[in-house]
Length: 306
Image (cartoon, rainbow, N blue to C red; front, side):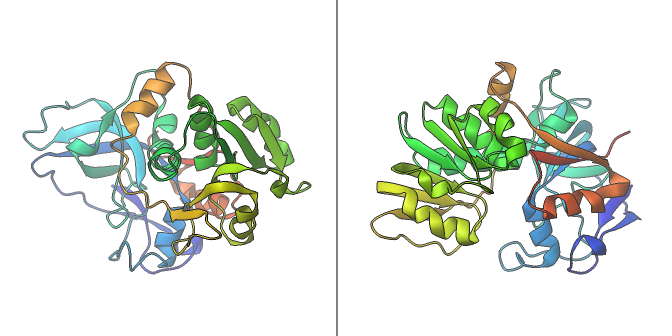
């Protein structure tokens, strides 16, 4: 089967296409014919070797965690699935494998997707939706009526967080570039700040900041918090509380608890899945380069199936 893999750490330039043989599924495993896979910033970190202490990999390594496709084979018993089911899932980062024609995944980790949902939409959900949900509600303890600031509101995680926070009854403020302001408003933001021409610290008395950028954006975010406010970051492992306000890192590991809610929201017409661009597997390097710019609008997707 065709796979996009790396044999050493580096940037998108170390990516290559190669043929690999897929083993047979074991008990409670499924072989998925991959139709689409989405690219996450984590994929770039895994390829660069910067996550080796947390998610060690062995070469050759096929990157990619989030995927959707069709069940081709099942290892007994795996009774909740059948061959032909349309599913989505998330591979463990150390295992990877989504940027390939097929992948073997634990059957229990797979979520059947509705017929109205495209493979590209499904592949976009696991990490982005799961990270946003965990950051807002599990780590951030967001409550109705609170004020939340979502950085990069047009990004993969940010676009999900804006919608989830609005649905939860929060007052949503988001940062975005000028070209994305109307998009972020359409997702549910009450206020959108153009981070290139406006100072986001104009927002004050914020209960929760969701940071997906880090650096100076994270550091300056402390000044917008109200009493007892909290920053949740998906970037800075070592964040510490400051001046009576909490700071926590969101370590996203498992998409399974969140995917049923994503499907319920999608079926109810309350979840918009934003796609920046779609690349064929042969152009996976270009997909990674797009994500590396840090300016993707929603999700970048690799279309694997024909």
